[in-house]
Length: 164
Ligand code: FES
Ligand code: FES
Picture 1 (cartoon, rainbow, N blue to C red):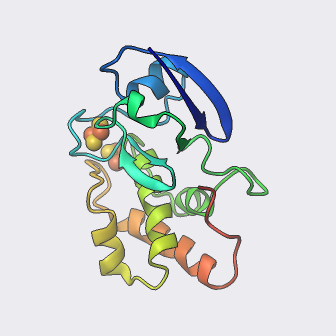
Picture 2: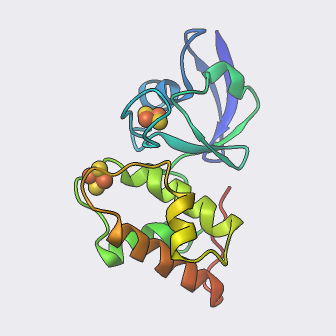
């Protein structure tokens, strides 16, 4: 079957199996391997993308459900920003909030959404907002430092975070 959708601003028409997930379509049909396949069961958040502006775990969404949808992946999150990096991506680089990196694309997507939806969230609330994204390496301290840095910049008039 075929599904027409927009991925990172580009119109795409993709042939796929009826039972195929959005994650599979992104990674294996379109070569967008930034979204990771961790558990494949909706538990780890490594596959988080935006569909029509809302974060979803793409391993639980059928590609066929995305007919006409606007999908944003980690590859497209920085679109429209001067250096091609979303402020959350830049903050992760600056704070060194990455170890193996497997969880990071999903966490950055969740964090970008959290900052936009709850710009006044304190550290504990930010922790809860990204609690669905699991990291086996970092202990979360630097990840939360990075999210707080991006949030602080957004509040002090930094570049707008939204690229949904
Ligand atoms: S791979 Fe989708 S939530 Fe783990
Ligand atoms: S940095 Fe390795 S799983 Fe998070």
